[in-house]
Length: 554
Image 1 (cartoon, one colour):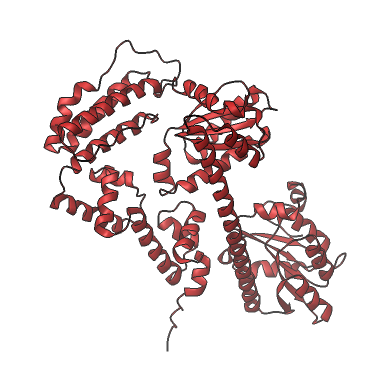
Image 2: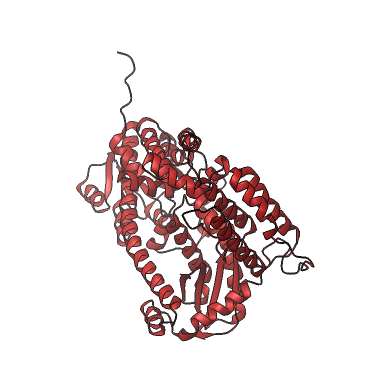
């Protein structure tokens, strides 16, 4: 067998990894890469096929070589190539026998058959192996290239069909999961807990009703992550959250995840030790942070619960969370010996409101946040006291300004100081904006629309627009929809998808390149958005709408 990859010998390939079942390897295949296996007992034929084709243009990044069916079958079991180019007449194990074993083991690789003879048994073997072409030696390079193109197209179409089926199954599963979570949250939030409902949910999901641990997590930057990294798609964000939970907590056995209020709650069956649970809790938090940049506080009481104690367990873990230091000084930072009060700024805030001075308003709040940060220690419980103080102040100022609508208030469970300051600033900006909407504000909305249209590949979110144009996200969202009849994110997505359609139809850029140009770091997510917008995957759209190349000359 010739070289497989630079510096890779046959012996090193044999040591690379143990044999795996086809279904497991198929799940590991990369979406954007393909491997080809060239099987022929003649070295010059193997090398000729390898050198004749521009493999990268067909999305093939790995070339594997074998000199007979025995060696080829070993490589298939290890590498799961998507495409196999196979001779029929070979020693030890010939082509028809190899193809028969290939299908018997359940491999779905596409096959191009090479043969020096037009024999019926060879043609039959090709058909049974789902072959895409049968080339007689000597063959033309152009014929081989066309066969490879045909095979790659079939591979991509097969992938898309599988993806569509998985997508539909996923939607049904997600709907059921969300329904169970909502039931659990409802049963726990009533004045008197519906213990029978809680027990029923646990039994329906196959989780024990007693002897389990309870982990509680408070996301610190959820809104920012959903807004900036997931284009406002909270469902996709939660899908990522759950996937990471599955990967990290699998060694502990059964677990059940649900959301309640602002928290993530995870129940873990009690066969593991409390020490092991604590270790995996820390590992889960690190995984969220490194993978999706989600920062959390957590609470864990080292005891086991029964289903009637879930709410009390949540309260116990929440008591632990509110003691956490929200500043960078950590739990060991010294507590300050003096207090900072927000109420002292009431007169200045009221003046800024009456003058409609957003910049001064932002500076007043920013200076208070800086004072809090300089304390070195600020527990979540302390911040909640400031939140309640601020909410009373907002209500009082709103009454003084005789505003018709009740002003928004801060959530008690904001646990990031920067987010707390931004949210408070946006609330006061919203109070200014609700006082009057003249020509200037309309021109600003037009400026936002022009900025979006001119920067469709940039990282754009309601938060980033609020920071750039000095309007609250709520105001931008409301006025943009009133002015243009659609939301900011739908408008941006529409522009991006129209540009994507043009690029796919009139350029040779790959789907990955198109997605990056339009601000999508994840081409899989881009594919989902594109399918939702057009009803087709990017590859299918290109296949159906590719503009013909202009002919050269007369």
